[in-house]
Image (cartoon, rainbow, N blue to C red):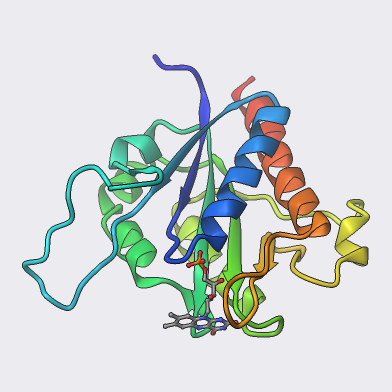
Length: 198
Ligand SMILES: Cc1cc2nc3c(=O)[nH]c(=O)nc-3n(C[C@H](O)[C@H](O)[C@H](O)COP(=O)(O)O)c2cc1C
């Protein structure tokens, strides 16, 4: 049996969601659990296209076992037309075996997203990501308003999960409030997972 960990599973094309994943991982570690960061390969309209087994840079690709054995899950995606990105949806669509066995039932989960525009669909993306997690029977943890940054933020951060406003050129870095809320979400997830495990 490996050490309990929270899986931080994300897709990122230009790095903003990836940076959020790192901040959430720090929060998870502050909350007392190990964070296992994993990504998914891009999908292609060419069915024959196959990604290398190990990505050239960044986190390793997630396996079903990473998901099956986790104590909790933080799921992250860039916003694509107000929804999660196809590569992440593709990975989730391959998790029927876990649904059939109830492998994720009762585990805590949280979501995070990055957008180019401030009102470009952070909440809709977060809600779209929660749907498959609810079907899997996971317990959703958001961000409570007892986190002062949720009321003070002029960028990302919602009660449904962590978010980041990356700007039209994708170059806006995570600001202080967005970092605080990423870490708070990760910490909360780890604390809930530890309570559920005991
Ligand atoms: C096909 C496509 C659709 C997008 N749709 C939206 C959108 O609906 N709202 C928005 O604000 N940004 C949208 N974006 C911008 C990305 O969400 C934004 O650049 C995000 O920060 C990228 O995250 P990443 O750096 O992790 O890849 C879209 C980008 C692409 C490529």
